[in-house]
Amino acid sequence: MVPRDHIVMLPFMAHGHLIPFLALARQIQQRTGFTITIASTKLNIQYLRSTISTDSNSQSLFNVRFAELPFNSTDHDLPPNSENTENLSLGNIGKLFHASISLKDPVLHLVNDIIHQEGKPPLCIISDVFFGWATELAKSVNTVNITFTTGGAYGTLAYVSVWLNLPHRSSDSDEFKVPGFPESYRFHRSQLHQYIRDADGKDLWSRFMQTQISQSCGSVGWLCNSVEEIEPLGFDLLRKYLRLPVWSIGPLIPPALLKNTSSSSFSFSKQHAGKRPGLTTEKCIEWLDLHGPDSVLYISFGSQNTIGLSQMMELAIGLEDSGVSFIWVIRPPIGFDMRSEFRDEWLPEGFEERMKQSKRGLLVRNWAPQLDILSHKSTGAFLSHCGWNSVLESLSQGVPILGWPMAAEQAYNSKMLMEEMGVSVELTRGSQGIIVGKEVKRVIELVLEKEGKGKDMRNKAVEVKKQLRAAVSDETENKGSSVKAMDDFVRTILSKSQEQAASIEV
Ligand code: UDP
Image (cartoon, rainbow, N blue to C red; front, top):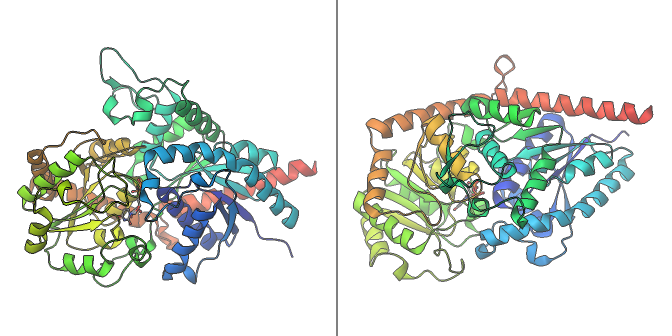
């Protein structure tokens, strides 16, 4: 029997990358029946397996192979989503970047095993943008490499271009231009993550990033977890910059988020409730049920970030003064072990008790069932670090965003959400960003107001929600842009594979 076509996937080992890779694997497999192998380190594979086994939507449909890759140092093999949150600090992400290079030889070994068993190379290797080495590796085994960016087109372009065009220092201004963006566009130094701010191309970070990203630019095309219609400028510019096909195949978020269901009736993320300390999904939903439509602010900074102690204080003061109801995913402040017992002195005296008594605010420790919260009708706005998954999840529910970007490409996402989409305002930036209770109150009220700017942002977010849903329509007469892009991607890799095979025979 001729073996099915096979795709090998190499996700970067962080929650915000693993989950979209898994969703991509599911989507490709459902559309084509190809065999998919996701290769990663032991703990990440365990996490992916557990995600599948606790997601009832996936079990019946989804059959993917996992390959465990050994790591040189177990220190680097961090679980993406465990109580061990201190491991997810940015310093450790740095170690992960560097350690990811050590996966090269085990991946080569894995691909050679596949060739040995199936008599032909995999159809392609889909790798994260941080695994640029996969491009050469793919060539060496007569297959092709596709880069998958788990971010949006605009944010990815800014991230890639900022790294590839160092340095960004200017004596007379904090503003700078980013190659690939229109002449009139200006970025600000405060939008740069600390690693890039003083990078000059010679330091370790620059050397790693520039090497991996520029090698990824040599792959035969990029897949992007976004939708053509929601960021036309981003896609246009990214294609021009890379001079490669870029397939917009998103949003890779749980399909239930793209249907008209409210979380009062079902639960998305039971799998998280048991893993992280904190309130159960049911408790959050029960609490949300007590509040009016579009009235609650949800606050979360993604899977890895937390804020500073004084920022935490000021945020609490602003929340209390605003009178707005909120759910806040709260973690120990920067500088504390993420597993530490929560201390009362991190918040204004009596804050939590007052919020509890008045049912004004719910503090959820460390990890909340984000999808259930965002899809609940009472959730009216999201104070977010603008991680791309959070952005897609929020907009898929028509929920506008209050931005507080922290790292990676989040500040560029935030800029795009404000300037191109009009669905967001920014509260502050980064762990050093200054926030004052009064300003927090003003911005929160602005986003949640029923008239004026708040209403405009909500209307625009609802438009984006419709575009996200239309993009995944699979009706024959009315195929969505992401479905068409996926079909085109599959056609392209099949034809590349035939070309490769023909060239080997000759
Ligand atoms: N998430 C969650 N509960 C939390 C925090 C995060 O379920 O309390 C999920 C969220 O739904 C999203 C992911 O973690 O899917 C975070 O990814 P994102 O790209 O937004 O940010 P990152 O964690 O990569 O910075």
